[in-house]
Every structure is written in C-alpha cells, then in structure tokens.
Length: 105
Image 1: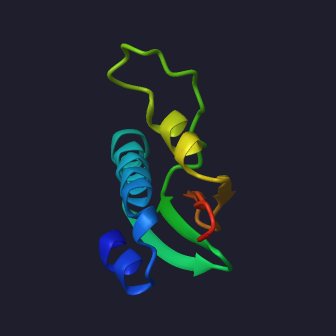
Image 2: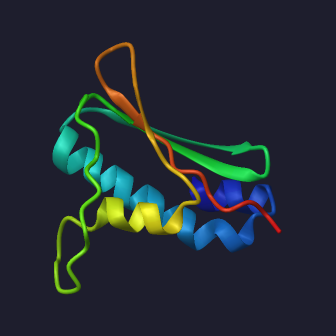
C-alpha cells in the first residue's frame, strides 16, 4: 500500500522511511493495543501523512533507544524518520498516530 502510494504520487525518496514508519506503528498496534487497526496514507500539502488507528487510548511512549536493545525502539525510529508526529484520540476510545514526512524537494 505504501509503495503503491509513493509510486503513484512520485514520492520515491520517501518510500523507505514511509515503509519503516508503517512497519513500526503497525507492530506497536499489534503488540500493545491488541485491537483492530487501520492504516491510511495521504498527501497533506507537501508532506506525506500516514495514520495508524487502533483501539487503545494509551499513547505511544518515546523512549531513548539503547544501541543494543531489540525492543522498545519503534517510536524512537518513527520520531527520527518523520518531520513531525502526534497522537489524536478517537471517538470510540482509541487513538490515531500520525507521522508526517519531510516535504518533497
């Protein structure tokens, strides 16, 4: 889905970071929210906006990444790859995490 969108929109330079961001956020939703989830991707002005929605109200926690750690690095990676990111509550008690990519040059 992410590769198709980046290809359709000519955003080839953002493909790698976008795939990594989706992978991390979906993994977090599966491991921590333990609920259904949805992923959307859209162009938002000059940026690529990815939204991952799940059923848990608990926000992701940005922790310092230990160089040898095998877990708990996902949000750190998302923050490093995205220009900005945030969390919005949903009306059904869940949340949407929305990283936004670097604008196209």
